[in-house]
Length: 425
Image 1 (spheres, rainbow, N blue to C red):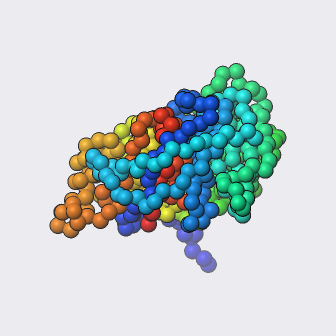
Image 2: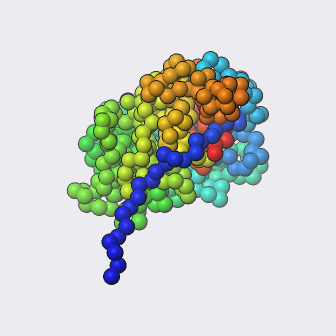
Image 3: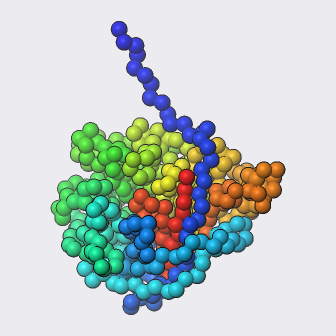
């Protein structure tokens, strides 16, 4: 007679070795957009920038997509040389000034109102999808591919996604595509409090949320899937992260509601880890804390508290080491830190004193001295022990990460484009 079934074990990362990350490239470019002297404001948590994955290690440029007003622009950014390692106050990395770049409007992507969200989805084999949505929830999904001898992604087809009812009041909207299934899309609308699921150009299902949604993702089936094998929909709404199965009945469509106490602030962004690695889903918002769950059992793993000075609006897991994540908020700082493991290894505090944070963890020069043998900062190893962060010149209008690569692109309100490459382990 067999014994009782074994209990599911919670993922424990407390004893894991400290993560390490270095800045490989970090450059700043001034962007000129045709017919656009200033950028449109957008919602405070909108992400109107996307970056495509590098096609190879010897790639000479980044393909970045920026939206302002009703237009989506393609920007080819030369790949910078290796980062020189310049640092400023509190050990913050200083981006190297580079030549200005010119944006080209994508005439194939037409919107009738201000664009609120832009994303690039890699499909493999040189195929990609560029998705954007305006403030009324009208989305455009453009199929693109790389063509030999031509820079960037070339658009081969465009599809319009129309909501079932047009919202009278404009506001934030987000679009997400199912990984590996570009025909499936989800569009969330803030003031309408709904998420519409599309199969091709047809709206097949509408989810009505309890709070106003602020971010939406279609989870990869390798990360988490419904009993029928279809992707699940993750939505941040108010102080909670809701997981929905669109194939279930309306009453049982929500399969999980993640909102660990005492978190009461609203969530503004979420992130999921890359396929093939540690399965993670995270969210962040008003309370300046990164909350991380394991999607296979929907159990909380850890939280990274007080990582920035102001509310968080962007979150991405590192591809090289998912125990690291990149965060940005309502100020001008981008920070990479370790959300899991021993708290003594963690970086935190954002734009605060170089000696301590609200959690009592040390960063900056004090952290470097503790990390070094004998307490000498000059002997401390480079990387996370001394803090990995950089700052823009004004508020971020979006921070994007390339799929499967530690490549970040961020645009500030003053049209300064920052592109960074990291090496994480």
